[in-house]
Length: 236
Ligand SMILES: [Zn+2]
Image 1 (spheres, rainbow, N blue to C red):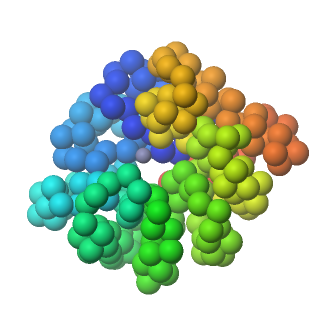
Image 2: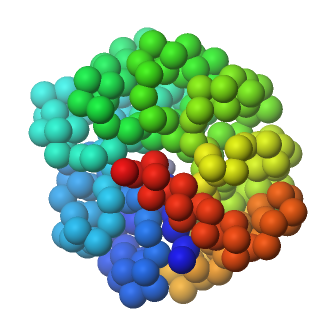
Image 3: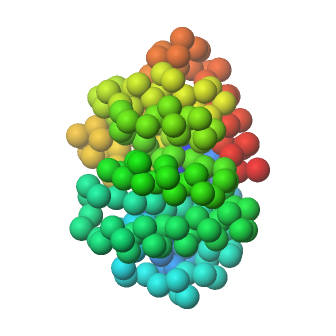
């Protein structure tokens, strides 16, 4: 059974339908109240939704308007910090990130982390809030061992063969903490420098499984079962 531990639907009813028809377990990320409502109507109760204020939106969404969604969701994320792909003030990002970490900790909700360029700051912050963490598409060669020591789950993205830091991580994560993600079809198109259709989606997941299985000396079918089990455990 295939699974995708971090996916953005970007409003695609076609992708939601394919995931449902092919029985692909996918964690659907929602980064605004509007997106939550859209995704809920697209997937119903078939898929787990995650909700969190993305670092890129740290100055545009306000705590009061998102609280009902943080309460409704079973997973908080993706949340974190980013010094590479956004100009949003880092102090504002840190303040909101920490508020959400605190909320997740108090409400015992697992967290999906975005760490781009701020790997050290995110590591320092999560040490203060023991919880179940999933580090989404970690692509830094630094601090990998530190995150592993905190018993985090990791999603391997579709650039596993082209980004040496991702390849390295895929080789070293404990097998029971390893997950696969697409981050949505536009992220796959970006990572693989090619146009991607909704119908390509199962093949994208299978390709990542094949590559990681090869790196780990496993049969793809065994890794597929392991990764599915890992995601169920993360969600439980
Ligand atoms: Zn994402």
